[in-house]
Image 1 (tube, helix red, strand yellow):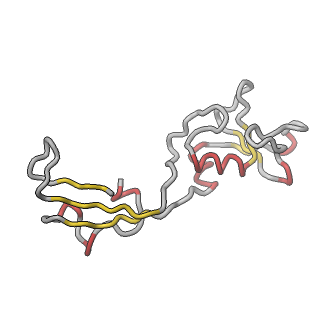
Image 2 (spheres, helix red, strand yellow):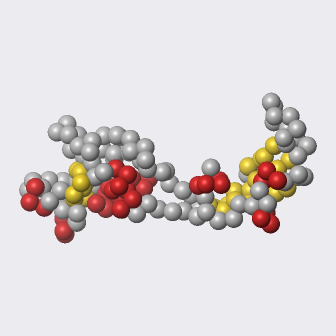
Length: 144
């Protein structure tokens, strides 16, 4: 959703795309925005595992690094179970959740997370004389 989900310019000379009467071309600029660890924690409701509750030699299931190595926070997702120990070093979990709104081990969906937002420019061409089927008289938008 360009109007609500992107930042940057999205209207030529302050006009809404719906206000354009003739053929027009305008660019929509997207700026990547990474979720902060605080936003990811709020969306997933992860909990921090105290160092004394981490088993000796316990490993991050994704990287194989020792949990809590060098004092790194250890985080447990609500989908954690004995069958799928969804407990990770913070750096592993943050990187995984920024790529996909799912637990990196069991694939539990955390739908409140937004997917990655790309950086780039999208060109939109409004053609007044070309209609989309079922929407005669409205023109059409070509997104490049």
